[in-house]
Every structure is written in C-alpha cells, then in structure tokens.
Image 1: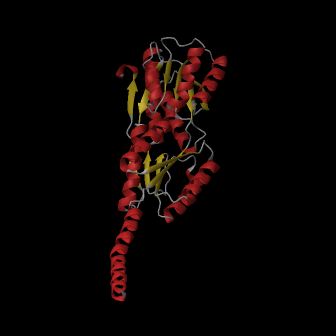
Image 2: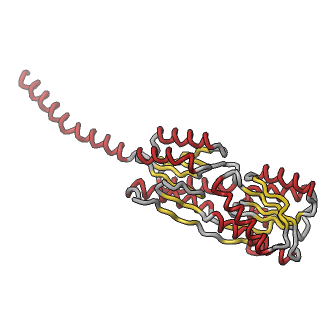
Image 3: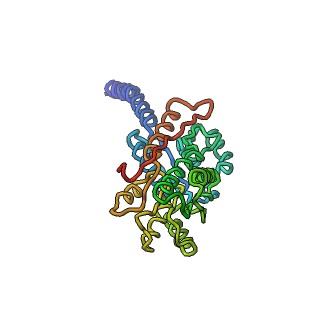
Length: 315
C-alpha cells in the first residue's frame, strides 16, 4: 500500500511538472495577443469632414484588428489637452490628433512619445509628432478661391458681392482663408468681399449668411473654407428664396453631404475640393500601425494630401 501511494505521488508530481509550462505558455500567448488600441482626438465632430475621417479611421482599425477610441474636443483647446492626457493614462498604442492649436499640444505630445505612444497629426500639423498628414493650407485656399473666381468671371461678368465663411478660429487654418481671399481678389478684381466670418459648422454658416444677406441682399457668391460652413450657407440661401441660377455656393473637403447637395435638382452648390477625408483616416491608421510594429521615425514623417476640384458636372 505504501509503495502504491509513493508511486501515485511521484506520478502526480511529474504530471504537474509537465503541465505547468503549458499554462505559462498559454498566459504569454494571451498577453502577446493583447489587442492594440489607437485613439483619434478630433477637433470637432460638428464638422462633416471629421466625421468622414473618423469613419475611415475606424474601418481601417477594424481591418487591422485594432480597437479604435474616439474623443471629440468640441473646438476647446483645454478639453483637447485633457482628452490626450487621459488617453496617455489609458495606455493607448497610438493616437491621431487633429489639433486646434499645436502650440498648446507640443508638450503633451512629448509626454505621449516618452510613453512609447505613436502620434500622428491629421489635417493641421503638430511639428513634433512622429507623423504629419497634412494639407498646404494656403494652397488649399487658392484651389477653393479659383472655383469662386471662375464662376464670377464666367457667370457673373467679373463682378459680384462675396461672402467667405472662414475657419479663422483655428490658427493654422487662417492661411486657408487668406488663400481664398487673395485668389478671388487677384483673379476676379471686380468682386467685392462683403464679409469674412468664421463658421465651421452648418449651423454657424447658416447664421452668418442669414445675417450678412440682410445688409447685402445682392450677394451672389458664398465660398466656405470647408463644406461644413458652406452647407449652412446653402440652406440659408434656399430658405430665403435667393437660389437663382446664377448663384454660387462652394466649399471644400468633398464630404458626402456636399456631394449629395451638388446633385439635388436646381442645386446652387456648385463646387468642392476633394482631399479624400475617409482615405485620410485610413491612411493615418496605417501610419500608426507601422510605428507600433516597426518603430518610430527619427524625424517627423510628413505626407501632404492631394487636392482635386469637383464641379457639379463632374458628378
């Protein structure tokens, strides 16, 4: 009996030695399979452009097997800084930031980098990020302004009163508004810009146009820094019954909403400039994945968006 118990104990101990490495290996495999997490700190989800960027980012993260986390700064610099601090604390593996004010973010970006988090700025630059996927703001404005100037010269005999719905509340985007204004004044010198006001949501764009048209009822051209404000201007003109065949509303970003408005019967939404917002979100997700799996660049990797004008007839 004693001999039987001795054999049983020996066999049990030997079995434990065989089994325990398998459990250890399984735990390591589970740790190795931990899902990566990428975050997107958005300037504002009121802007249809960023909705499209978000969708591209989320879809590509899903394809990569990465969890996507979205936070909306609501055009509040302090909130964006706080959001990013929280993302660092939650130990995300990478983050895309559409910065409201890069000067306010450079310190927190250094903190993220020190924590081993990949950082890519989207649309507007953050100079010390690992990657910068951006647009030449002034040249973007030039492309938008060319569309308005073309309409003024070809459809309005070279003279028109113009509203620019800008985004001057975001420091880097002021140059886009300058590009629009300089181009209209240069290519259509007979035009008069009666207002340039910041309206980076459809609601704000609508309020600007409603207000300006009360004092300048002869306006025939409204051009937005983006489609967001221009969409509001478009709705305001329609509601006021001023959507005549010679009226021009134009924007930029080629959002789904703008493209749909351009195709409405009798639409006065004439043109936009495509910078592929959905593709931008997917592209940055790929940049973050590359940094997380292959390492960070020694210098910021800068990639510029391409621009393509779209007119109604192109659709």
